[in-house]
Image (cartoon, rainbow, N blue to C red; front, top):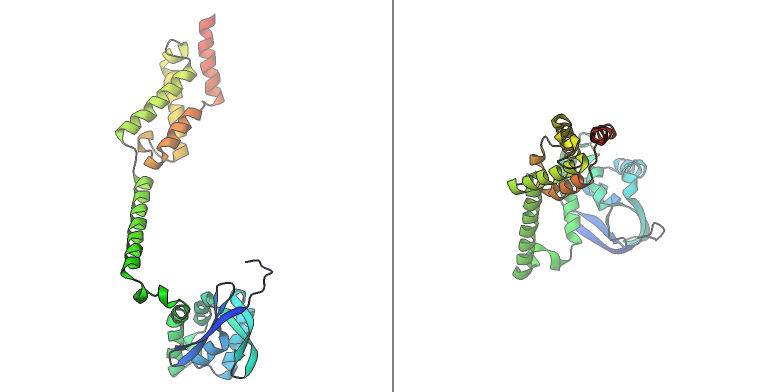
Length: 255
């Protein structure tokens, strides 16, 4: 919804809660709001305390983001009503310290802190979507979907925490050997026959590989990274100083 589009109420209800009523309002943005005064009155705050809370929610850096004013029909005719988005309700009532009220009001405040949001949310859920009204067939679909999601989660977990098998280790090793051989110029070159230089080139490849994938051996490559590992090796090049050493060693055979 555009930021410039006007937000207005499309449905309102008085919802019984804890011996009082909460004013719930659904707006055209799809969100549910609650009448702030009804919350204060339901908790049992005195007039001064209620006015203090209405001022606070409109000045609090966080809470004011969820505050709006709607023109709503009431018993006294149409009035401007301060409402707060339902998702902000728990934060608001949590900021009202039980130590500032006494007796039954304190207990009532705690009830609002724990349950008011859920009661209002349920009031705006269509009856057809409530668990007790869903057919067995639809429930079965939900159960199946939940199992599929759990299975997907387990597969993802395995991919993220399982290392490659022996066959994949050999493929990485073969790809690495092929890459090193190409840079050394083949098995008949001086660079390849220089055991120290050949070992240094292998070490450079696998050190870079392990650092890139944050592992201590290419054998410990995670399954999810196997294809990336093959691609990494195919694109790898030796450091420039090592490349010059290889070229210089091979160049000796030309003289």
